[in-house]
Image 1 (cartoon, rainbow, N blue to C red):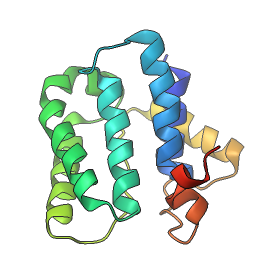
Image 2 (image 1 turned 45 degrees about the vertical axis):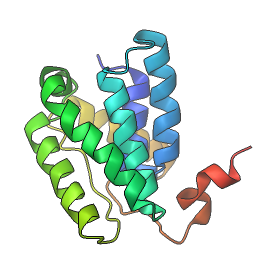
Image 3 (image 1 turned 30 degrees about the vertical axis):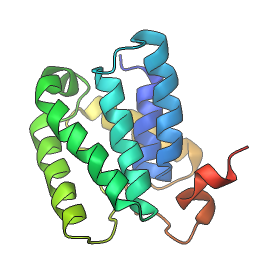
Image 4 (image 1 turned 135 degrees about the vertical axis):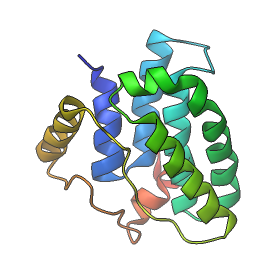
Length: 154
């Protein structure tokens, strides 16, 4: 029912906390189903993951720029986000809270998308089980290969 790359995105976001991989997985999907549409819901989800990648590695200015962009897009994408099993209103509130935290220069904190679809949640959790990672655990900030993945990429 839901695209496999979307479920992989969520499993990475909530399980491995590999926001770089979130970007890779969903960008390939976006390019295959809605290429060149920068207003796509897929682009907004990608940008949320990229914002969290920047935030976690200390680039709060870059994170804030992307979070603001996403906050501006969420209302226009409300129906599409809701159809993906995410509560768009709660997502908007969470993003606003992240913006506030970034503006106050408070440190990164892991968070989860407000998934309201039991099917989406179940699929993402099952994938995390297959990968042997805990769904919903916080990021391992000591893992530099995760925090600075762009430097270790080949």
